Length: 322
Image 1 (cartoon, rainbow, N blue to C red):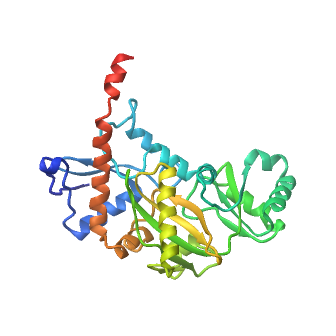
Image 2: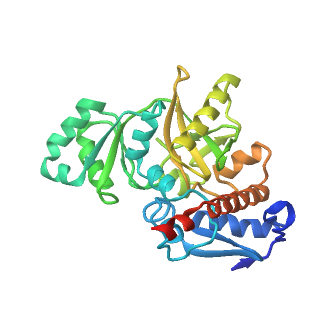
Image 3: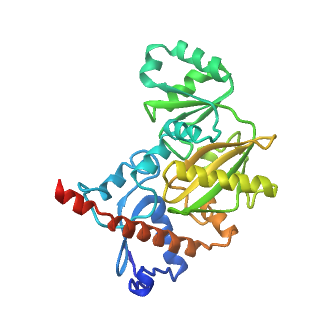
């Protein structure tokens, strides 16, 4: 698959890649969700399947494109590098980084499969004593709400833990936060920008896999979110801070809970957000004045900017001296 944009690397010292047809933009956007995007002079080449989630968005396959031992080296790609992808995907590690940076997150407990197998009753008791009866249970390194359960009693907790362990050997149990679900899109490398916030209003008990992908009426998007100017600015500042402390590049979506007292809680950051025309990430940018096709143009430019910056580093000279 190849799209041939107008590529003029000599102008202003950079590539000028433009998506001229809406259909072409659709093709590239689908690839941002499912594939690494390689940029080459003369066209956009789509190679190497990358799925959101385990062995995809967590940075496993990005290792193919970075470093001296990369299988495929010397090509720009869209999105976060290995570090940002891996940290963001492990919800436990991401929250440790965020809380160390002064960001508020839901309280959580980590459970490993070996611990639960050795003492399931003791594990359940430890969790309920720490977090109470109403909690969310989720795999540590998975997305799209797969394997997530909301439970409201200790009797339900064991079943939910077993379900999460079908997807990961490490799981999170987190406190239930009563609040509005607010999201922001972030775009950039060293100097990221942030979209207007949007609100997700689930029509199910929570924003589950079914609500996201099966039930077309599973949620209502309110864009821009109905927030005060002060709260909007605070949410946007927190989105940028989260993006930076997780070491993200290119793009990410940051998800929040907004409590009744206006306290902002960072739930998670998604480095491979949904990218269809009805997905929150591009819809937030459209409401912020960046169209779907121009958003793709900018992501491509950011990938090339990062690639050229990395090429200017003196690693080759250093390696020759080793």
